[in-house]
Length: 165
Image 1 (spheres, helix red, strand yellow):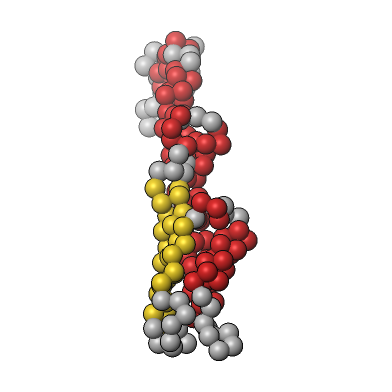
Image 2 (cartoon, rainbow, N blue to C red):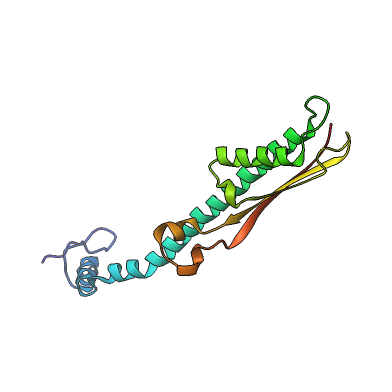
């Protein structure tokens, strides 16, 4: 192949010895020898990416449950703090309100533990409403993997204190 000499002394991409084109073609030959290397790298990094994605989804689910429980507890505390008629609602009514709010939000109210203290007292006393809800790895249980990991790993809790009015 012929050499082209430009004004700055660069020899063109003609494939001549010492030109950049030769290096390019030698890289192409090397890539042919490394066929499948990208597949191996993908197979090695895929589990880490999936782990990160599953962790993000699980954290988002846990955060959502915490937000729902916080909203539930606030609603039940507001319900219990305002007197209806002559007296404030009792602890059983406040628990029922919290459990119904959880069901409306799509959580299983049968596994939640609702605690109420200070209900039915005189105005100005604190009313404390709390909820504990078991947190399980939802993706692990949905996929049916992990054996004992589908059991609850911790409890998500929310608590609110208001004054009776």
